[in-house]
Length: 351
Length: 111
Image (cartoon, rainbow over all chains, first blue to last red; front, top):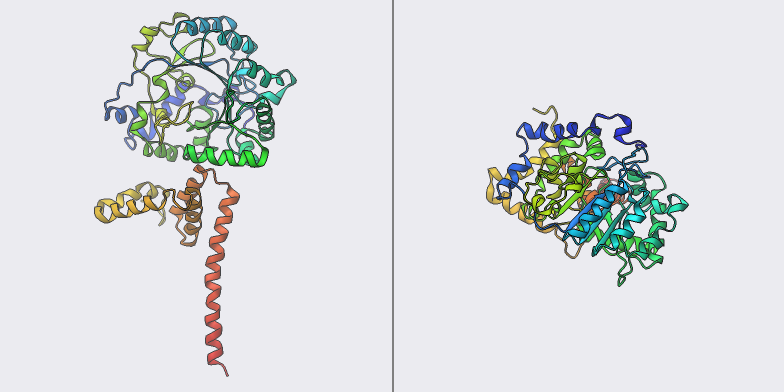
């Protein structure tokens, strides 16, 4: 289990160009596997174009209290990139003037940004219908200054989406670190106590499942059923939906694939599972991703590969929806991850 | 050319068997796909049965495929190993139950 980010280790994969070199070279450059561009060209979807903006996803910093093995952000306690209040104000201006109905706050652990609560309070006033915080759960139990987060979430009707790799301690701790499972269970129970995740509750609690290794997620409905049964029976925990997300070959997950000699097989599995029906609904078509320093990307994954939007408007301070919507979405071979099987997005399957 | 009889990469080519006999290959894959659909047994239960049988028929491709399939379905390693033991128990039981035939023959031939 790594304790430092790739960046802190000085690993060559911390550099996005190196990752892109791998994703665009090897088995793809050799012609063994088709480029994603060629694949979507066959169904008339190249270049991929955006639809109406629905989701503004904001990464408020790469700092995290965990160092998960599969993290495509390469987040961790040693990452100091944090969104300033000034950039948050620029985001708020956009929120007020855009048609986006969902605000999706991510990290790192978004709660570790010192301006997090201020931002939640200000954004809540801006008419967003669905205000999501992607919580790793353990942050709620990490330090007493975070103990009241469940009450804070409830007060502002925050939609909590939490990571949960498995319903067993062993698999969860292996991916996320020793003790993560027990802390996550405690945090989920605390959220349940506030009414989160109850069948008829408006306080939304969803879980995100990422496979703990070099394989694709199984059927989302079946996984949700298994998660609900096990968490209810073992710990009395309830939640609304489970989102099964495919791990994309970026940052630490790419590093793991290469180190474990699974990279080629994994890319074969992604390409083999390519589902043309998923292409039309990939999340980059209705989402804009904003980085901690205000740059704009087609999705969170492109953000980590530093592939800024192909538009004159590249920064939140210059935001203009009309100009931004007239762009081609940047793609590479990691995009196979979002079109595999039933498709994958931050909201689960798309096909 | 692989220097062993089994090359893990050959599993990727399984679908190509259809190229040399399209009708039979297609019928097999249709049947195979139907068998593993959710039915009276769950897809999860079928995956564990397939994993146990993979060991009994000693098919390395099948072991790789159904270990991965089990992981995708959230099956734990403890469940997987229990399934393998079920297969092993049946396989060894099948050997041992023939001991009765041996005993019968021995007794018949002995004074």
